[in-house]
Length: 274
Ligand code: NAD
Image (cartoon, rainbow, N blue to C red; front, side, top):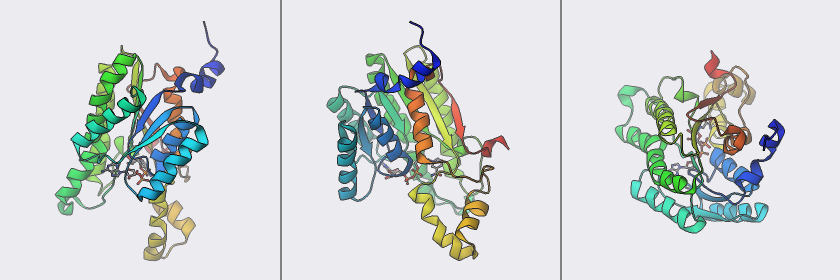
């Protein structure tokens, strides 16, 4: 039966209710917004990441209480392939499968190439890129068996353009764009889509925490730091919000997006249009 555009867009919760999602790096920021947005659509979620165990447990309980879904937590370290395999197996055991996989864990280090610590390079490549290879290789067989799947990778504007002093981050994010396209082609006939969202600057605790130090170091007001330092590259001069990024992920899970695969989607206030 033909569905109207509005029906396609509004049918999201009906379509993904009771499915299961794993979201890496979801104890804060964008990852937590993905987890809460999916849970709000009735999706059972596994959250993952580091932080204060009491706060993580409180967040886990609040997702269950607010949305009536099952929420479990994995402390798997995204630098450790064995732990990643065990995390996907734990989700599949608990939920029966992994229908939606969001690769989101990420770290940053900013330094000139000649001083860039090799161990930081290795950690960034492991967390921001290789962990997605491992989650994907374990999740795809489950999605093929279920006959449906969605893989969403949080890339960055830095998957499309570079900034100086971020060699490892930019290399990893360009890498995730390549991984996204390649896997999308491999599973194109399996009812599984694979896409990457490329946010510009997103207002997260990580970004917020940089403001007081930058105000002090440069003698600027809070507004000047936001506009002239943080948002210098972003033509709209507005931060992307975590909820806007999460809304794109929800859309990518819908039937309306089932023909979108292998895409590298900027959400960057015009940054990469320049
Ligand atoms: P954040 O620091 O709030 O979240 C990062 C998450 O990754 C946390 O849950 C953290 O515990 C987890 N993590 C870090 N190392 C880990 C490891 N070894 N194993 C498991 N989990 C680990 O940051 P965020 O701003 O929400 O960033 C989330 C993603 O979005 C990252 O991939 C980042 O590159 C990307 N991104 C962020 C922005 C931005 O402006 N904030 C812009 C573009 C892309």
